[in-house]
Image (cartoon, rainbow, N blue to C red; front, top):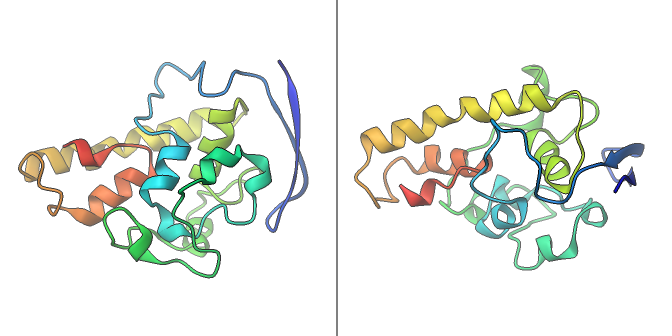
Length: 167
């Protein structure tokens, strides 16, 4: 079941990791994302400027109907049509980026979903769990089904695999 993956894209050259778990299965008990990477890409996350140069690493089906823009971040591609992202430079400044996943949390999640397990999993899962506060705030402050309420917060939750459309 162990599959070697060699990554060569704009942000990583010669990075090697192993997929040791079945795709989409055997997640840590505390990690229960509501959306798959494929669903997230179809909904529109990160202004479409994500994973545009590393498609070979992931299943082609993830990119069918994905809302992507190789040229630049375009908030209109996001599900809620609003920018809810900080820049990669800001992520780096805050210490959120690790060398194994230079694109951040979503890259970690995609690789985790595909079966990679790493020493960074516990940290990333803690970061994911911390986003629940946004879901709580949406539930507390918005009428059920009012997708216009807290659009930026809803978009941010989508970036973390929480389905904020369901509230």
